[in-house]
Length: 366
Image (cartoon, rainbow, N blue to C red; front, side, top):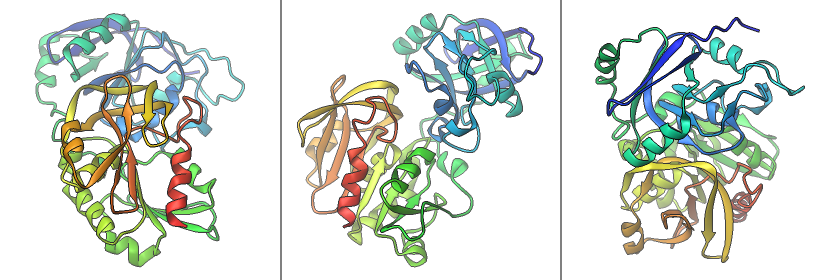
């Protein structure tokens, strides 16, 4: 196990609020938009989800690292969060399947973290004040210097990030002789989404974020298109909106998750907005108003579609609603084979309440 000394560290929020804690991960400095996830488990999936790129993650569960790190349970090829804030940082772990400790994992990937923070107080503050930028440092403890560094960090509002996390080269997933072929526009796709396609006799080809519809169509001739989850502001992605519009114009089956949901809305003239805090956790109740049932869902998004615009739209209809705040969780285009949801059906909070959405997509391709 890597040597670990609890040196002092500082967390500074953009509104000037300061928290003092202990260094974790790599000794250094990191910045990003601070947000919190209420999940009781699944910290590895959170760390490696590309949708969290550029964000400092606060985990509300008191113990992080207690079941170690397993190389089989990552959602991408590396840690995607900009930094971690937690209460109890557990280096010793108690799981035979684990490959290494959380400290070794963060040090190997140069991620700076802070522990021994009162995360209850911090989360209450963020809930009241909204998402904002923050800086963690275990090498600079001077608050004024940290404020100067934090002032130069851009807002997530208007930030295009998907092209930074997308694959740079195309690759395939699943069996080549599968019944269905799906082109995946990779804006930050999670591995378990690809596994769910493979489990349903789908051969997927994953394309870089800025690949055009014409290029995917000519190269792969897919039965359907999937628009993935990902980080950043959807309104800063005109290239992806144009691709979605072209898929719709060609009347191809299409399924979108999270960022893909927001892009489907934008392609139908429905604007998106930055949320005060966003939804991040494993227990969000969503009602499927078409089938009249409720799902326990996993969510991770800081942007959403504008509800009034969806209700007023003649192009789309609402399929899913969030029962906590009535935000729009799912839509489908009225005269097309295209639908999307704002949550993660490949995750397991319910545990499998929403997996039927992959089956619905396969039905559209039959």
